[in-house]
Length: 369
Image (cartoon, rainbow, N blue to C red):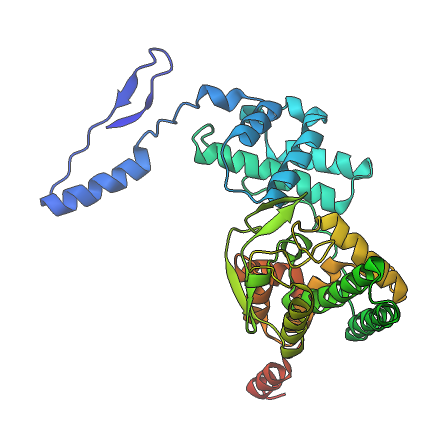
């Protein structure tokens, strides 16, 4: 068998071995000899391995992917930052862990935020993984590289703060309805009452379903049957498409939230069919609100409630934090519609309850102390 290359001739060096025994033992011995003395011929890297980071990112973004609009927007934005950085000139066949680690250190010194550090690394790693999968690279130069420290988890809203948002929204509905009763034929007052009621539904629905902002604006009247809510689409800058992980999900809403939805629809929808949009600027529901528009309406409500830093996404974190703190990790993962429970554990590890008294007592008994 070949045991190497002769440096002077460049030819393979052959060695032969004699074994006494039956065929089975000979085969076993042959495998041992190959492990001990056999020469392993390294696979020649493809020409694409010499591409630069910029060329890789261009090819990565041009390739077809089953990304949600949010993922596409994130990768495109981070790729633009990477292509504007000097790391764009790094060749992949010469890249090492140190190359990326030094770049991360430099970005941190330049004041790049923790979330953007993670975003840059995630996009670069995703592009390299795609190249390895498609055999543009043989090995992953980032294998074993530890990414930057993840940013601290976003703060959730306390239950009392969510209650204050709901009560403030209800007060605004009462005031708008009272003004409408005074002059029922005024279009502007009817519109104000419609929007106030939508805002009240928005708070309840976000705090119950943990839906993302883009998912909230993409709800139609037919997405709620009884108390069962279906989430299968989302809006990104007004373009309706699949949800973030392309997974259709169903969940049960609280009795009060479902009743508020059905009551709102019964009051304002008229002849609207099941495909009409739930959150719209006008009662005809012909067009959905844009995600930014929905966020601005929530911001006004939050300021009125004395909670200017409250956001729709923090309501989502409230749901996740509370369920995980109760030990309901699988329920939290399903409610948040994470692709796997590992995501839930990573994002909400800080909320896992420290409930190991029984374990400590058992170990104390074991050791007799």
